[in-house]
Image (cartoon, rainbow, N blue to C red):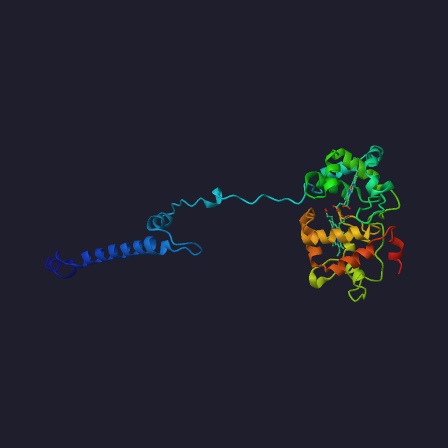
Length: 287
Ligand code: HEC
Ligand code: HEC
């Protein structure tokens, strides 16, 4: 009995009140600091007013910026992907009908697709998948060149496959892709001729793979046209277009990334190396 009237059990012991008071005080200071002071400062933005700071602190946000902001237009490089469906469509091309359509092309691309003008590509011998893809890119506006856009718009996908099959079969143009062996010589990075070095060995320091790995001779990547026998001026022009981003229909930016690394002199040298009126497969393979 006596003990209850004394010490910490005494009725007028002030400590419980003081304890509660301090707890409430800490809570108030925490709330003011947390919601009113610290909550107002934004790392990458201007400070919030008190009301917004409290709302944010509680997790209630009126911040719907991203939804309301206009988004940049989605840019896709091409409509073509090398799926089974696309390859089946290409394979379904009918040569006879293609020959009929090709009557509209020879004025520019030459008889049988063998071009005689420097800035117009030879189509003879070009892989059918390449012709098909480029026509679709012109049609959809993914690759821009006035007259070709109009020509391609006049063709259905089936027409494109047909004319692609026709040109792929023509001779005296580009060599059949993947048909040539890689020459033994020239694969070394010590090759003195810069064009040969780029074509057969690339430049690892600049992240440039050898052109021949995709364009031949010896290598083949679907969608990459053979370049041997192509018009040199056309090759050079396309490299410059890729480098400047004027042509941007290459899947995964493969060619843009490479072309940006090339100097104008290298573009010219590589174009001269590959280009030429007649296929140079033999002379390139044996040296
Ligand atoms: C008025 C001239 C002209 C006519 C007609 C024409 N082309 Fe072209 N074509 C060009 C030119 C020029 C280019 C290169 C344009 C560029 O630099 O993008 C080209 C490019 C192409 C390419 C891209 C080849 C590559 O190496 O990437 C294809 C495929 C093609 N034409 C197919 C055709 C077909 C098929 C026809 C007929 C239905 C046709 N063209 C009619 C002038 C013409
Ligand atoms: C990883 C594969 C790859 C490598 C390596 C590569 N290319 Fe290409 N290149 C392509 C593909 C794929 C295309 C077709 C792009 C498209 O769909 O329009 C292309 C297109 C081109 C064209 C346009 C041809 C035409 O008929 O329109 C030129 C010119 C060209 N490449 C030159 C080069 C040169 C020169 C090198 C070496 C310095 C090189 N490429 C290395 C894959 C490659």
